[in-house]
Image: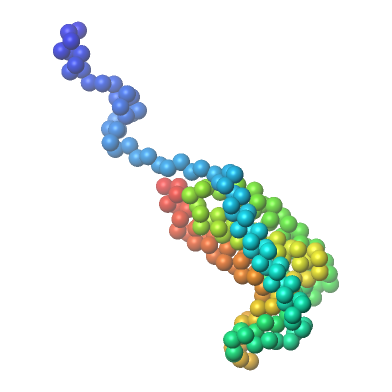
Length: 197
């Protein structure tokens, strides 16, 4: 084979494209999803901030408020009202006789351990998901501490419309869990497919 023939001969497909049928320019590179790994500690820090804020505000409520004695903040919509929740959200199973304390404490502990592990494995690109998981973790641990120390969850945020409508009294941990779950759902519905496609 002459030098001219060698120059005109096409290069093997695998050298340029890795495929004999797909030109190099048409190959679609999908981004590789990398787990949070050690970066999960930044999300744990967010959880600790939520936990500290939750426990501090509950301490303030316990020391500054009288039980079931509303203190108007923004009338007629917001009061600080100290209340104790022996059940789950919206006082579910509050009158169950005491076993619910250990049941909900066990659930919160299992959920917290799961979230600690899942934050390490969550993709770095999924920042909204990681924020949501961290918020749920901080809130779950905050309410778990209440159940183990006091046998009930301390609530104090009371949203209402005069005497016409009252939302169940809640706390910072409850807010954190609710916002976190909303962020996780938004990620699942709108962002997860974009990351995997």
